[in-house]
Image (tube, rainbow, N blue to C red):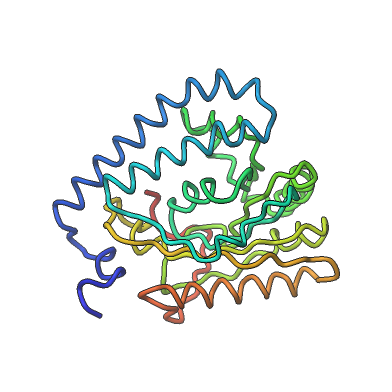
Length: 273
């Protein structure tokens, strides 16, 4: 693989000084935007209905973050399947590949309103966690799997009936290009039990925003959105297999480093940046 390929750039042991400086500036931008936006988010968001609050608190903040990522770091996104983004007012289950923090910022700018299934520890973070609580995500304790699944089903059904999409990362942790982790069935079960349609999302974000290093590299992240799957009559097992197979195939197609045969079994996979 030549040195100009996406994965080669992202995995360089000693990234160029320019990448380090741009990454530092981006983190400063992220901190400033989060702190400044928290005040109007809180003051205005408390009085808005949930759908409007979702856009006001999360949508605008994420757009500001992605603006900084584009113009400071030089990372942009190419979206394939933009026409498949739902606009009929129904609540969809969004099942997405998880490679880095990038998708948690990018997806709210594309598919909204939506809430995420997130670990409860995030609610304790200053500013970010407080804003997160405003949009009422589904907080779960990943150490209590049975109770967590019940929370996803019960709270997810409420969100879906209100026309709010529910985003699920079935791998449960960030898995970089070249590796895989078996999908949990929580997202598929939520969809089949509520007869909600499913949108699946694949991307190669770890090639530009790696999970194991704080330095980001300029370039293009590719994201693919599949046409909605109607779930009525599908079993949880069949739907889970459909989404897992499609996402893995698309990730291999768009990645510089396709699957190398290694499955990750641990609950976590690397650092958090």
